Amino acid sequence: MSNPVFSNSSIFGEPKRTGTQRGNTATQNPYGTPAYGTPPQNPTGQYGAMDAAQLDAMYSAPAATTADTRRMTYDDVIIKTGGLLALLVVIAAATFTLAPQLWIIGMIGGLVLGLVNAFKKNPSPFLIIAYTVFEGVFVGGISFVYNTIAEGAVTQAVIGTVVTFAGALFLFRSGKVRVTPKFTRWLMIALVGYAAFAMINLVLTWTGVLEGFGMRSGPLGIIIGLVAIGLAAASLIVDFDSIQRGVRQGIPAKFAWAAAFGLLVTLIWLYLEFLRLIAIFSSFSND
Image (cartoon, rainbow, N blue to C red; front, top):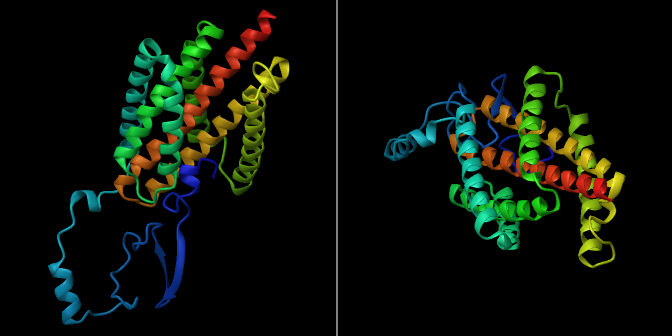
């Protein structure tokens, strides 16, 4: 997988097989509980009657709540993703209008919380919402900067992001693009290469070795921008596949927060790539 939110989690991965018991293969959900329909087991791992102490412990345990038994659905992911996007847009609009200079604070806070959330085994709604707020500040401030370079860049980038998202979802749902091991390996290699290039270019521009967009200036910058947008679109398709597996495997509903967070990370990246491409194209056209 490409998105670290999904690739670092066993929850959204392929189901694993355990040993064979009484002639049947016991399949487990990725979060460690028996798959739906599997007969209950005692602590030794063998099917059979439990002793009095085990029965007493079972009946003394608190009853399972709706949150414990509910499974993640597509509606869960859609609602949480929509809510996070709405919050992001509100914070970004306020920052764009009132305090665009705070973008650096948003970038640092978003980076830290993004890493924390990406590597947490259990999603934290509070930390995911906090990440969204910081990213809203960053997106609003950086959008103001790019809009001064190319007026109207924000509107064009939003349209590009929405159209690309819809196109990636259509391709995935239609089955025209299938997420295979070969596809994910190719995407991972391409993303590592692009990340290395972007980091080198960032260092060269921040240290003053290169000016403007650095190695991303001119026609080459436009080509690289188009490649980056293609990579982000491919990452969206892999994200959709990860979410689909999670729903089919019946993972707990709380992981809808992780799925929404993963989609948000990719969408922000896609939007920023559109912003950069539009600004590069505008500066190239004005030369």
